[in-house]
Image 1 (cartoon, one colour):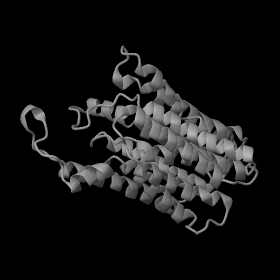
Image 2 (image 1 turned 60 degrees about the vertical axis):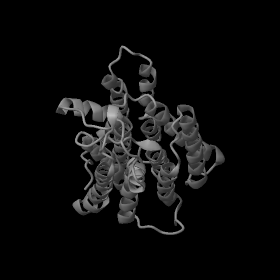
Image 3 (image 1 turned 30 degrees about the horizontal axis):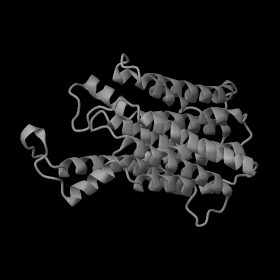
Image 4 (image 1 turned 180 degrees about the vertical axis):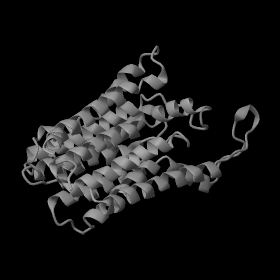
Length: 328
């Protein structure tokens, strides 16, 4: 990837997106009420500005994903309304999923929150099936499969998100090791989707679709930086908006590559989509009280890494052997 493309298509979008998360975190922290009453209770309720910032703080990852995708897409392809080709519908799909998920309420009762998330995942799947009428994949059965996989990955992340061992949100843990454990625990969904979309980007590079590879790399870099940043600030979660947007990016990107590229077997794209599935291990381990909290996410992280990076290695390996990778 030429340096200019990497700069404008990956580095700048990722840094702009991460800046949004930093500003949201700092502003929410600064405006949060600090006065405490007897017994550690808040003496006064936060004002409207603090409540608004806290609302945005909880959805900053979704906004960051949308911004990174939009800036990278603009640098590589340019926005046109309406999209000129079938694959360009991926752009409004991902941005719309991020905005839609971010605007949904977060009710406190667990059952209602789960119901809202399931309904949102099904709507995102329907949007993917409707919008991505791709070459060779425009048949109703293929479009239903794309929508079903989008909803399925989102539901996997929703189920896992309810099982992550979340540390307290109000403070940072003392000590670097404890902060790393807290960051991995609370931002597990962010890191798993960074690994999954990063693996997809590598396979797309091997297949030769440079524009899609750049956009995928920008989103993966954004999620990776957010996870690293979580060591030093209160760790952010993927959130419903981030869940829908990254699911649409992963499945939609793989579908676009499968439709337009025939340089590598199609099974690579199916394996790329399956990378987040090890997150279900967190659901199983959630009921095991003997498993330490920070270790419950390790099978998910290792499984996602093995699938995503192993798949990329199999795709890139023959190109390296022939001296065709990295591309000029």
